[in-house]
Amino acid sequence: MLKSSTCIAAALSALIATSVAAEGELNLYSSRHYDTDDRLYGDFEEATGITINRIEGKADELIARMKAEGANSPADILLTVDTSRLSRAKNAGILQSVDSAVLEERIPANLQDLDNQWYGFSQRGRIIFYNKDEVANPPQTYADLAKPEYKGMVCIRSSNNTYNQTLLASIITHEGTEAAKEWAEGIVANMARDPQGGDTDQLRGIVSGECGIAVSNTYYFARAIRKDVKGVSAERDVIGWVFPNQDSYGAHMNLSGAGVAANAPNKDNAIKFLEYLASDQAQVYFSSGNDEFPAVPSVEVAASVKELGEFKADDVNLSEVAKNIPEAQKIFNEVGWK
Image (cartoon, rainbow, N blue to C red):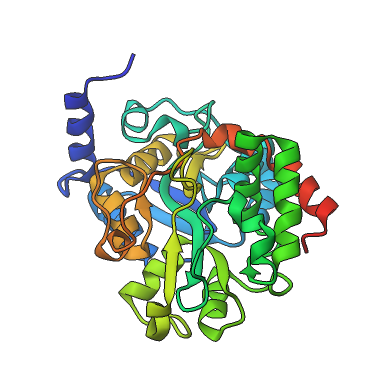
């Protein structure tokens, strides 16, 4: 049975109070590549007295390392981006279930693993951007992107990109395998160029005129609002955006999340860290420091994110979506999505 909201609030307040002193350390394996996260870690250390030892690398490398280390792994936390990687870590047996009333209360159920092995702490919408000068009737849904009228106009990342894998997996979840395959075939037919670069490069393609339409995560564009991003910020007025599927299930959201390592030597400290990531202090920072949407609904978004406007987000359970990621990759291969 969950603790009351009053108890949850008290626990969070105690966690982030600077008077709190805790012993020990935390070994954090992280594939989040944002320098701005340094402040997040520093605030946790100051609040708790727990020293964070960081091992950073690409997600797949860290997952493979933890699996190879086995019972002798020093890892306490795996922090990474996207449901696909969190699911991969769970399937590799390197995470463990945790029991935390704070996390159950703070993190929406659809952003939690069904077995409590991982939790989402920030979100990004994967939405449609377009050139306002060239596209009079932009797509309003993900399905619209595959319509013949947009042939030669769409720029999107490669099929091995985790954001695209999870997006297609969500379409499978909502529409079924056949509809998802037809969609993927339509996107390939509509591509303005072979997939290349990251999400910012898709936005730059709109500015350069190479792409009339692009698919990108929201935080790449919100970052260009907050600070100068070469090839985007100076010309961002030409870029419009659509949160897809507002009349149905809503815009797809991917996440950044974390879980406690299966053999965590500092399990209690690891749970404290996850609970800290769910605190108002950390949630505000995810938005203000990296232009993401907080996972906790009550936390206000940063000005750069707020400029994108209000929208309906898909609240499908991402743990269920993760089950369709292997099928999504199979579809990508079958339709020739490079």
